[in-house]
Amino acid sequence: MQRRTMPQSCITILQHLEVTGSQTHKDLVLATGLAPRTVRYALRRLKENGLIIEKFNFRDARQMLYFPNTMTTAQPTASA
Image 1 (cartoon, rainbow, N blue to C red):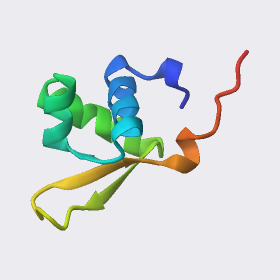
Image 2: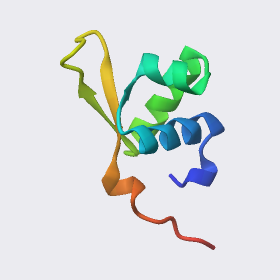
Image 3: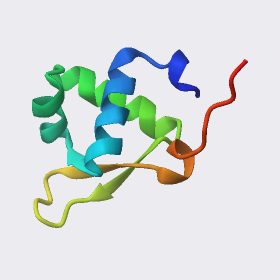
């Protein structure tokens, strides 16, 4: 999925993760100002498309950490 076809919430979350490296759902809600439900939706779409990776958070087992998938986000998108 190319960035231009993603909802704005997905683009916002992905750009934030590319800058920060890793965040929890709660951190993303606070940093972006998006609603928790919107962040969950964006994370699900990004995971389905392989743009982010979800990993276990050893500091707090109740939360997952989200990372940008550098293998897919580092590749430039083809322009028309």
